Structures are given as structure tokens and as C-alpha cells.
Amino acid sequence: MTPLVFSPAHMAAIAPFAFLVVAAIAILLQEAFDPAHEAPERTLWLSLLALVATAGLGIACVSEGNLAFGGTWAWDRVALYGSMVCLLAGGLSLALVVDHMPVIGVRAREVYPLVLFAVAGMMVMCAARDLLVLFLGLEIMSVPAYVLAGLHRSDDASAEASLKYFVLGALASAFLLYGIALIWGATGATSYAGVAAGLGAAPRLMALAGLGLLLVGFGFKIGLVPFHFWAPDVYQGAPTSITALMTVGVKAAAVLGLARLLLEGLAPLAIGWGMVLWWTSVLTMTLANVVALAQTNVKRMLAYSSLAHAGYLVAALAAGTPRAGGAALFYLLTYALMTIGAFGVLVAVAGEGEPRDGAADFAGLAERRPMLAGAMTIFLFSLMGIPPLAGFAGKLYLIEAIVVAGDVGLATILILNSVVAGFYYLRVILDMFTRDPVGEAPVIDARPYVAGCLFVAMVATIFLGVFPDMALDAAREAFTALRQVAPA
Image 1 (tube, rainbow, N blue to C red):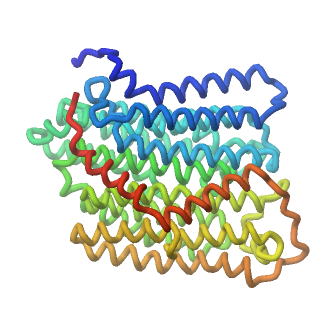
Image 2: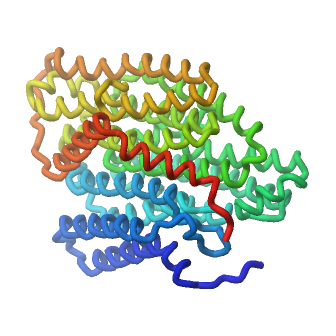
Image 3: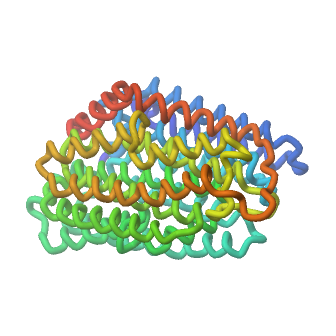
């Protein structure tokens, strides 16, 4: 057994995660001693400050050799990049929460620490180099997410979403845990370095069975076909501000956790998982885009859109090259901004007791709120991959990396799916600019924090489309170093 030594280097490696957990506990206690919840904005700013401080601490502590606990935890550039995406998703989602919860009649004071705990779990998944640490991060992330999905207790759809998410999430965790047990039985190790070293002499059937169960567990969490059936109902039923976090943060952490597991621990089985991911990505993006064409509810359409983008990300993992992995990391960042922005517009349009997320609710939005319509147009154009927005740069580098990897067929399928997706995105844009409202148009209240979230997401979406080099180079360097990290 590897002895646990709490050296300064080990403490530095876990410092960002530990700080965020302590901050979440402090904010939870602060809420407990404020029974009237008289200052929700104060809690918001404390939460945002905790996220920013965690990001700064993460940057200060990052190092390729910054491993802890026998190499089972790595606070390297990959962990930092993925955690930054999750911290960004958490911060923007909280900005939506503070304006959205009063509109739907929810006074859940625990929402802020729950979001922080969920983000802390995402950080663990990004940094894990051990199957048990990975499972721990998954549960730290998932348990708060189950509660967040059902915050709107008086809404049957929210209660249904929470129950489905909990039951199927528990099922996914069971598959994952059984896969971990089989991998441990085959290799005698749970650390990625130990698993990779032990696979050469491991019983092949047991190892492949463990790999299959691990992929099933991650398939549920990411929303990959054929394990996607829960996602549209859960994403539609959960409060929209929480859906924004679930579709971005949870997906980003799961994709990055899967990438690190496959490349650092299960690389000897690359032929097996590479083909599985290829077909899974093709089926996911194709089915999601085709079904999205038939949706008349904008929120449900965006839910299927998020599944299609999960297929794009997994396509990069299927390519199996550092260049494709770097492109996937960059795409995670662009996806986070444009998706949270689109859900932010839904929050801005929603009224008291009315979600207003149907196609008819967006009719004539350009006349009523031209700024909202313009923001939604930018986010949808970016999701389509229209230049010079971040979505175009993300898809361009993703497709280029897959082609360089020698898989022209997969790149072609991705391009065709992007064309199909353009139809349902354009339909919303046409509704906003060319259709008249049905009946009397409802009044859309001003929401300053939502406006701030939309402004940040919109500016970043444009900036990364025009100047993608810095973020792309950081993503490529991080992913190239992923396989070079040696066990402690």
C-alpha cells in the first residue's frame, strides 16, 4: 500500500478543491443563520467570490508534476482547463439562479452551496487519476445535481425530473462501480498507471467487460445513445437556470473524466474503446439532431442540441490523438458559453409561473426585446457554427483534428449533422424576427443578473470566434501533456 504523506506539494495539488468545499460549507452555514434569507444577492456574491478565488488558487497551484496521494490525483493543465470550464459554468448559472428562482416561486436557500458542491465534484473528476477517486468525484457532483433538478417542488415536471435523474443516475453509478470492480479484479490496481501496467497480463475477457461497464456508466452521465433517454425529460423539467449547469458543467466534467481514464488508464484497450466511441458518437449526434427537428418547445430542442454536441465531443475522443483531444477541450469552452447563453435567454423570457419556452413565445421577440433576440441569434448562430463566432472556431478545429487523425468519414458525418442542426436553430431565429406574437405579447421584466450573464457569454462567444488562438493553444498543450504525466 502506498503511504499517504501530506507534503506541501500534495496540499497544493488539492488546495483548489479543498478551498471550494470549505467555502461551500461556510456559505451553507451563513444561510442557516439567516432564516429570513433577506439578502440573496449577498449570498450570490459570496458564491461568485468563492468561484473566482478557486480559479485563482488553481492557476497558482498548477504543475505537471503536482501529483498527490500516490499519483491518484493530478492538478495539471488538463485538470485546470476542465475545472475552469466548470467554474465558469457554475458562476454563470448562479447569475441566472438569483433572478430566476423568485420568478418561478422558489425560495431554496440551499441552491448556492449545492452548486458549489457540484462544481467541486466536477473538479475532482477533472483531476482524478484513480478509479475510486473518479467515482468519488462523480458522486460529489451527482448528489447535489439530483437535488437541484427538483428544487421547484410545486412543479410536477421538476419532481419527475429529479426522480428520473436520481434513479437513472444511481443506475449509472452502479454500472460504473461494477466496471471498476472488474478492472481492479483484472489488473489488481485502481490507479490509472497501475491499470495501464497491469492490462498486459490481465484476463482479457474480464478487462473488456470492465471497460464495457465503464463506458455504459459514462454513457448515462454524458447522455450518449442508447443511454440518452432520460436527458430530454430531465433537462426540460428542471429549472432552466439549473438545466444550464447540468448541460454544461456535468457534461464537461464527465467528458474530461472519461478522456483521462481512457488515455491514461485504458490506452492498451484503445482498439476496443475507439470503435465503440466512433459508433456511439455517430448515433448520438445523428439521432439527437433528427429528433430535435420535430421539437416545438425551445427548451427541449436545446436539450437535444446538447446531446448532439456530446456526440461531437466524443467524436474527438474516438479520433484518439492529442490534437483531437485539444480541439475537444477548446470546444468544451465554446460549448459552455453558447449553451449557457441560450438557456439564459429562456430565463430572461420566462414570466411569473410561465416558462414561456414554446416556439410561440419567441414569436415577435425582436420587436418586443431586440437585445434579447440579438443575443439569442448570436448564441444560435454559434451553435450552428457560423463565422466569426466561437462555435465556428470550435467545430473547425474539431473537424480539422479528426481529418488529420485520418478519419474523413467521421468528419463528414459531423459536418452533415451540423447542417441538419441548422434547420431547427434557424426556425427559432425566424420566429423571433418574422412571426407576429400570438395574442397579446406578455411583458418581459428586466433582470439585471441575467443581463450580466448574457453579456459575458455573448462577448466571450464573439471574442473566442475572432481570437481563438490563446485558448486553443492552452487546450492543445494541456492535452498533449496528458499522457506525459508519470506516477508519483
